[in-house]
Length: 263
Length: 254
Ligand SMILES: Nc1ncnc2c1ncn2[C@@H]1O[C@H](COP(=O)(O)OP(=O)(O)OP(=O)(O)O)[C@@H](O)[C@H]1O
Ligand SMILES: [Mg+2]
View (cartoon, each protein chain N blue to C red):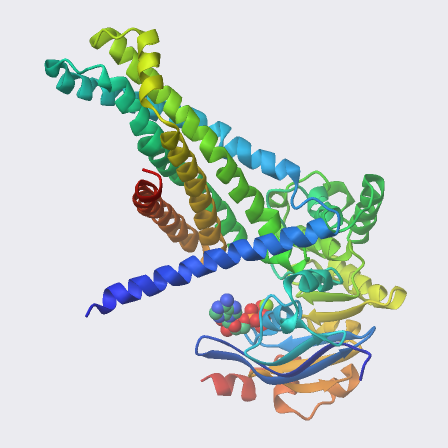
């Protein structure tokens, strides 16, 4: 009945399969290099990217999470206080962040900060034929350019999520101490007793997944740029939009699946 | 037959509805210097991209040393590409690397050469194109012509068997142009390299070429020695060589 939706699904599947092929081809190039006894890519490039994607994102992630944790405990604290259940606040914030908000917020911020940079950078290289030149030399742009970037976000995302969780709890602990009269040590105990391993597992799985999504989408969009500077701009915008939407969609899917198989 | 380095048979290529190449046949033999002529937008750069397998033909086959390029799997394709050097029309240097690292890139990524040897090769190639003093500069700090010469040096560092030049002397001053022409000639005379050169400069085309081919409306319409080319009866070819405004080339477009 709806041609528009069918078309959208078709385009989504096309992009998805292109991204999967991008990963397959990148793996093939890396494997070929390793068979010949070489590193899959330059270690230097990888560390440059981890520095950029990971270390460079720490202040932003920490700041945003700190204030979110602060706000969340402030609001829930005032709601729960009349019932004398403000002791629930530490667990609420800790579980909320480790399962849901930490990965989600970090995923969105990294998509905007790093995904955009990857797309713009690779897009400019595509437009100026640099990617093609690398390909024509037989170096393999996927392993040389894409692999270190994707791997950097993939591996650094869980670290950033940990930072997000810790700073959110820190913000919550401050509010609990000053507004709700819960001492920091007691805050720790409450978090410890309420959080369970499944919360941490769920958060970790999501972090890796979101890292993979942001890395692959932004690199794919960068290599697919057509049509000069305007093309780079368009691609960067749509890369951020697609990455953020995918992160939210996969977050929901993850929740559904995790609740079903690991309640 | 077997000694042809590049062999294109019945190649056709279209970008969407726009047909660029149409049942094109072209063979390039070992140690030849083939100059490809053709109007702007006739598909010369596209032809070179087909040879390195960046583009795949919609029909027909492209062979490099007897092996079909479009059928090769990625690792084999990459190994084949290491034997081909390509000089880009717009240089295509890696803008985030300085000149030295641009030249070092293929050597570091694809060979096991030691750093001293890499440096020696870089010095030698930069010297060939007269750019020794730019080693530490970034591509953005160089002029278009200087970048082009760096691009040429980069194509040579791997000692390729086949070198593809996309307008190597466009935008260079007459003296440097002649230097580049002589460099192209000496490459195939001193080594076993084969070259395909796309150029619009008629003087250098006749100086360099051992054979010439004219690309017109998706086809090679003439493929002969430079001397025969000069005497060609084909109206398109003679108009193109003389640069006259009278003839079939502009008529067809109107
Ligand atoms: N990626 C592409 N998508 C669509 N059309 C393209 C693409 N690349 C090239 N073309 C078209 O193919 C034709 C041939 O382009 P090509 O770059 O091969 O020309 P050329 O002979 O090298 O011209 P010039 O002498 O100006 O460099 C042009 O009409 C161009 O518009
Ligand atoms: Mg061209």
